[in-house]
Length: 109
Image (cartoon, rainbow, N blue to C red; front, side, top):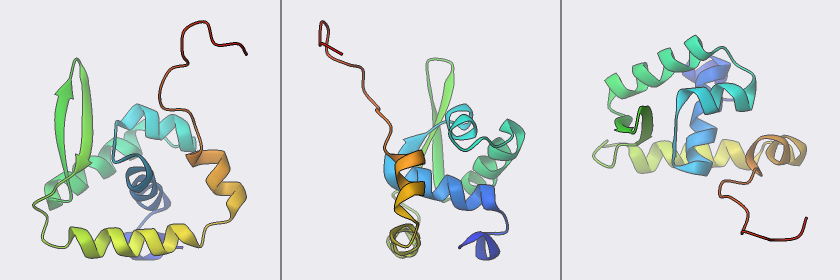
């Protein structure tokens, strides 16, 4: 839906991912959407250069998160949220309803 505006489908998917999870890294986004790692890394760097995301190292992994100082952050997130709301439920479940924390120890399957 927003790929025409942002220039590519990978850019749109990165924004959706970041909207849902607030931070992420290129390999996880790449594997979630079955995109090339190189394309995702380039998009993240482009958005970081634009000031939309900031990155930091956590161990050896470069994590990206929203830049709270970006002047249009509220408006950008609002636009992405509106587009996300119009995604089909099947697509939301497929990509965005994944477990992000480990199971409790000794929890029955």
